[in-house]
Image (cartoon, rainbow, N blue to C red):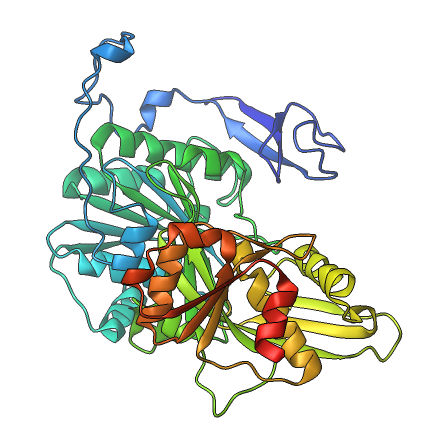
Length: 457
């Protein structure tokens, strides 16, 4: 019988200490250390495989001696997930998907597993029974003969099942429910999450089998477990959205095999998640007549151009201190734009409450929507509607000038495709545009005041 060893782990970053500490030396968090019991055993007793068939003599190689193999990816069966992953599933990759409870993480991975009909997929669930998963699969209206379900939380038994089945893709729901016999601590603890993720990572790399891990998040919106978990995996995906709204956004926060600026958009239906191939249509709401404070901005997420509806409400401040309440936009940047409107354009924003909303629940960081936000605010303040056939794509500088934005031709092309008649841009973007290829009217200005003069007179 091995002698148990007691160690203390930081619940925020996973830092290990032999004694309890009030402040973590790694992340400087207070009162985050928790005691865990670790049993020292011989590591080969519970390895997923005694000896890897690919084991070889360890030898360093010069960079020019290594052959660059062609990248082989597997289509995920889902165009949105395929885009977010960077073009498909990479063999041997470890992908972590996090999101709030009830957002649709399990539904997404079950749907993806059922769509991969040519592959053997093992779905390991530690949260639901086989009957529950079967009921959800029936609701999705999809089935596959190569889709296998295992309800188990012990990693030793999971690897025994993997040995016999030899799956081509493994889905774990969720990593916080697994426990390894190598440690005596409870499932979901810092040590267990790190140990189980390490065993799955070793399995993925040695067999070139892609593994998807579903993870919980904390009340702060961060992935639960040690921070080292995010460092271990190859890709971290965040499934976002309001449970009371129909739309969900799959966003990449880390990707070793592709861009981290791509997003995938889904619509939650009774029959599962529907891919939204043209998100601009859902981000622009249908309304009767023209309303003040509503404009359309052209933004880009990854390689995808999007047209989003920006809604503003400006009203006199009742209590002396004006409110600044943005939804889906950075508050500090909103304050900066309001200061520019007051200083450079002469609008009295210091006595007004300003509420800003990005329609559809999307979060935007692209500075190219600055112009659309300023026009939306002034439209609401002066009660002058802006035509719904106009869109805007320009960054606002501190001097009130319109700055050029990148990939302007893609923004113009998307606007033209959706039937817009005019687009307002910076005059410094004109030289990169081939006007012969565009049917939409392009208006270029150098200053924000010039745009106000053209729109409002």
